[in-house]
Image (spheres, rainbow, N blue to C red):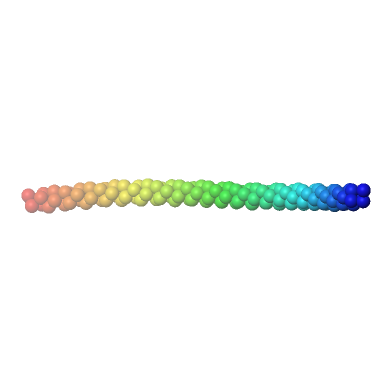
Length: 132
């Protein structure tokens, strides 16, 4: 009987120790699971913040690029208008020069015709004097 009682007590001690070890292992598993969930939530939050930051930076870069495109378009428009104004001025100057040349040629022609008429008259007058 004594041996059985000791064996029973030993079995109860082993069972109690096993139950304690199991409870401790379960508590440790629950603790580790909680830590893992907290770590996962923290990682998700950090990833969300990084995504938001990346989105904001992307929007800022896109806005800056759009501003540069608008500035370039404005500058191109200004250059086109400036070139158009210069071309208009050059055409007007060329037309004025052409008119001045035409007027000058007409004046020279008129002067030449007058000189020719004067020379004819002088030649006719000289011819008449030589006949008489």
